[in-house]
Image 1 (cartoon, rainbow, N blue to C red):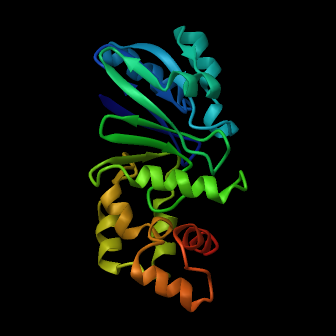
Image 2: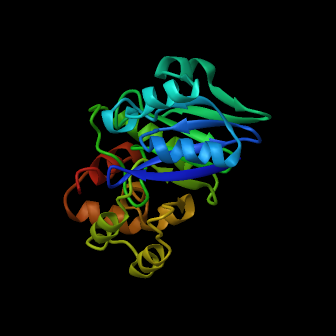
Length: 232
């Protein structure tokens, strides 16, 4: 399964997930670039989906559907299906609420398209107000293998690394992370996120000590998660 990434609206990231001959678009704001890639690669665009319902992620869906004939799969339909089949391969649809109530992650082979749930170097704002659900979603994503690739909904790497440098995060790991950053293809692994993303490091001893030193609750995983979410 191949994943093609397209930048639009400064820092938004759109995706074309390609099987042998059919394809799925996730967050299709880069309409012209996506359709050009579909033609160039000889694919049939069959499905259009979004990671959540915010306008910067839904933009482009109607245009893509009108010009390609692909089916737009809404939130309820995606969760009901559970998987999207591209030829002989399956994309799993995971409910990952927190940023919004309808946030989803698409598990494509060894990659995750995480929308605004997990970014490269940070996490999304909890617009749903449900930090407990967000905690469960982050736990779900971080249970994937270390070499799983993270393709997020925005490129916030520069700001995220700068913020992480103000916290108890290994400077050497941050240097290596930023050295590997390519704005033309923004991707990281969960192994890297575990070393540099302060918002998934809430169980790390250095982070726990830091939170405790600031008088924040650290008695349980959910408490540490909620404490670290107050830092940004």
